Structures are given as structure tokens and as C-alpha cells.
Image (cartoon, rainbow, N blue to C red; front, side):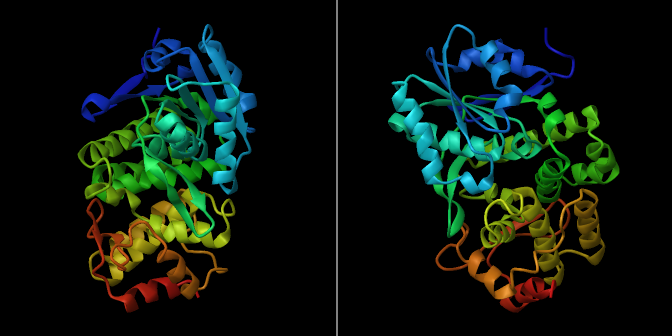
Amino acid sequence: MMSETFRTLTLDLGDRSYPIHIGPGLLAQAELLRPHIPSRQVMIVTNETIAPLYLDRLKASLEGLQVEECILPDGEEYKNLEILNRIFDRLLEQRFDRGCCLIALGGGVIGDMTGFAAASYQRGVAFIQIPTTLLSQVDSSVGGKTGVNHPLGKNMIGAFYQPRCVLIDTETLDTLDDRQLSAGLAEVIKYGLIDDPGFFAWLENNMDLLLARDAGALAYAIERSCADKAAVVAADERESGMRALLNLGHTFGHAIETGMGYGEWLHGEAVGAGICMAADLSCRMGWLSQAELDRVIALVRTARLPVLPPRQLPPQRLRELMAVDKKVLAGKLRLVLLKGIGHALVTDRFDQSVLDATLEQVR
């Protein structure tokens, strides 16, 4: 029996469309998973933090299938090719064939790595996303971006590969620490800024409820974020146009993550500072009013996220790191900027001296 708070969205990609199930207690709802598992072979990929909490519960719901597990170390610093190879080792050791299904049980790192493994193993096998952090529930589990980091750049090795299903059990947030919760809120704020000013205003009025883990507020924020992302991905799956708007704050943020060393700043923390930097640059360009900039910074700060880059990274180093970015095209850096709250654009038409002023502001 499904809860009254159970919701299903659909990401419309024609014959590759898939459901996004949202609600409490869904890990035990085997009927939501089984239609998307093509054979008896299931490999659950998780990490050392999540496995003791939820692995047995998920395995119990898959009784009757050949269920194996691959438990990886926890942390962004392990999102690399060396650790990725452990997934292939387990698949080959257990003689999994091309009819198998991989299930990602964890946060964004586990989801990205499992998806990339699924895209690569025997040239593509089924996979399912079961995200357990707010950030992965509202962003990385939806849309099919998979991959690993390289010491010179974040997410530079990967593939677009869609899951068969996304299952968001909101009760998994009960074990999420406060820092990780705030990190997820950075991506939630992003949706309001790029194309949903009504949602941004709702966040201004309800951020305290989200931080207090109010179940209703969190469920609404997750559903609204997933709906916003699903609409963008359906229109531009492979990021040839409007999907790039979802990278608001990410060019700055990825530079911070790479420069500080993966894992020092959480992804959402770096994106929070990156959103404020993008808003600051937009204001300096005359596209965003000072009042709107103040609203952006205030909301990010209320979410308990940094609003400035770390002092350890001088402007020249940030510029170097930003140059190694997937949005660089023909040698030109493109940034997602704002022409108002709820109106984002991708552009390479910004004055370098204005960008320098934004990068220098922390000095």
C-alpha cells in the first residue's frame, strides 16, 4: 500500500522514458523496482557509510534474485578510474552478463560511478538510481550524467547514460548529516534561479523548514526540483543548449573542488559559493540588480553554505582551473549567468576584467 505522499514523475525521453518515484519507505517497495530489472542478476553498488544503513533492506526487497554487492570507500576523493575498476572486477568475478542490472545505492559519487560502469560494462547494461542524499535526490540521480573525476578536472571522463528508474526514498534523509543536507540545498536553490522564480520565493519563505527537516517541505522541494530538471533534460538530453543552464555556479564550483582537492569542499558547498560568484558577476555586468544579488547571497547564506571561494585559492589559480571546464568551446570560457532571478543564460560575452573583479572580491 503506497503512502499518500507517494508521487511519480516521468522523464520523457520517448522509448527511454523512465519514472522518478518519490516518497517515504520506498526501499521496501519491490514492485517499483522489479519491472526495470531485466534478468535475475543484480549488482548493488554502495559505499561503506550507506551499506550498514540500507543495504540489507534493499536486498530483502529483491529476494529471489541473484543479488551481489560492491562496497566502495566513501568520498569524492574516490571518484576515479582506479576505484571504478572495482565495480568491473565484481561484475566479472560473479560472471554477470549483458542482461544484468546495476543499482546505485548512495549519493552522487556512487550514482555517477555506477552509471558510468553500467554504460561501459559489455557496452551498456541496465541500471537503477536509488539516491540517499538530498543533492543526489534533487540533481545527480536524474538526467543520465555519469562519470569520474580526473586530477586535472572534475567529471571530465564520463558518458550520458540514462537509468531505467529513479527511486527516491525520502526516509533516507533521516540519516543525512547537517552539512550534507545544506550541500543538497545548493542544487535546490539553483532550480529557482535558472527558471523558476516562484520556487525561489518559496525557498526564501521555507528555508528554515528545510533545515529543520520538515518532511512536507523536503518532499515538496525534492518533487519541484526533479520536475524542473526532468523538463530541462527532456528538452535537451545531451546538453547541446538549454541543459547547460543547470550548470549555474558549477564552473566556479568545480574549480574550487579541484583546486582544494576532492572532498575538502563538498560539491554543494562549492556550488553555493559558485552561485554567488555567478550572481556577483551578473550584477557587475548590469544584468542583475543589487537587490537581487542580495537576495541570492542571503538565501545561500541562510542555507548554511559558503558565499565566497576559499582564501587558499588565489584568483589566478581559479582562472587556470576554470579554463579546464567542459563548457570551454573553441578556447572560450562560457559561463551560466543571470539576467534576473529565474532567468539564466549561457554566454561567453563577459568582460575579462569584470570576471577578475569577481574573483578578486575575496582578497
